[in-house]
Length: 362
Image (tube, rainbow, N blue to C red; front, side, top):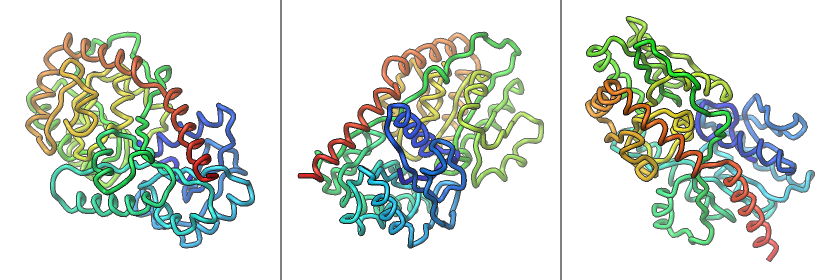
């Protein structure tokens, strides 16, 4: 597994769960990473390389990293290399070492951006760089069906593409047993504190809503470039910035909340949304990508990208109607239980590995 670990985002959460599940299913997993701390595999299976971290998520990796990966794959007789695209520069350079490497499976995490700005241009560049590398890999896993038409449009053969959605540990992420009755409407956000996740929109929207309804709070879990805004928006204590939290501790926070909000403008169905749904929370999020197919009108409220007013309106609607919040939350939990399971997803990933190995032999 070539990936980052431990960063507060969906990519690292997904990779950590996949590695853990693969090991529990009897597979031996080695990790190639610039991350300092990796808890999911034995220390002797962690192979680190140097990198300059642009942010907690992306890095400029040492030029020697691909050669080190080649050497370790040979020494440990690795059967398949699983590369997480959108985690570091190594993912793009491995294509030039393909003949010396085992079959390469790439998971394409990066989604398209909605709107025009400098950071959406950066995302577009990263998207094209990842696409260029993926064309030379054996199998491609997409985390969101909405990615597929874009990638097919770039000339990828459809037989190399497999959509494997994010999953949820429904035992860990379960609803609260008791309903709180403190009179406070608690909104919660989990993810990077960044523009692409719409945190700026969320803070502006909550500030407006809180002026109308002082009996409201917003809790933000995560870290990132917009953390400086926490102090500026937190004069009365209504905004609670928790910072980064270990994944296994997040359910305890979600169980104390009433509504999950993430007005992102980057397409793709985030793990944080699924986990909040599994905890029985109604959702306010942007109507882009796979989210449109996931959330019906009875499970959440979809808003347009960059629309502060629509987020405020959604907060008003859910904040004023406890029965609506509970009904939506029950439906969210039921959908996750019926349609999303890590066990099913892991079986699909292993099938992709086996197909990549088989095709390389022939």
